[in-house]
Amino acid sequence: MASKGQKFKQWTPEEKYKLIEPLLTMEKGSRTYSREIGINSGLLYAWVKKYREKGMEGLANKKKPGNPLSKYSSKKNLTKEERLEYENMKLRIENEMLKKGFLMKEDGTYVKFTK
Image 1: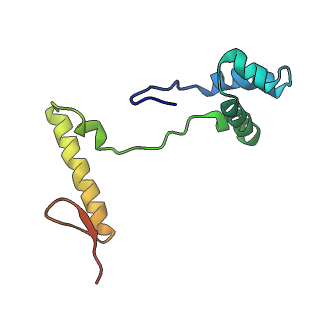
Image 2: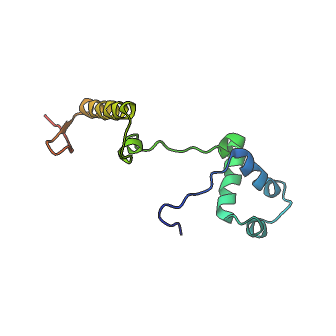
Image 3: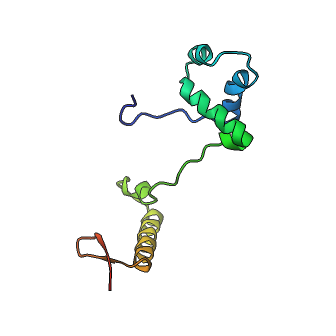
């Protein structure tokens, strides 16, 4: 089980391919091979499946974009540029929310506006 704040290894598509190549060519059995290299067999199966479906493109890391404000809100001392970027981002988000029909209450939360 992962512990709080644990960093996970990021594998490049080339590294993933090198690891799954013996499985693709049927040189080695998946369970014993996964024990040998110390990687969960389920992860290896997922990589093999993605490779068979989409080739090397399937092995690429597809990280979902997170909260753009978290980059700035976690810092204590922002530079002038960072402060401006943070304010700009907040205003863009507020603008998008208003376009979608939300209203901001005094406490900063949004409520759906209905006519």
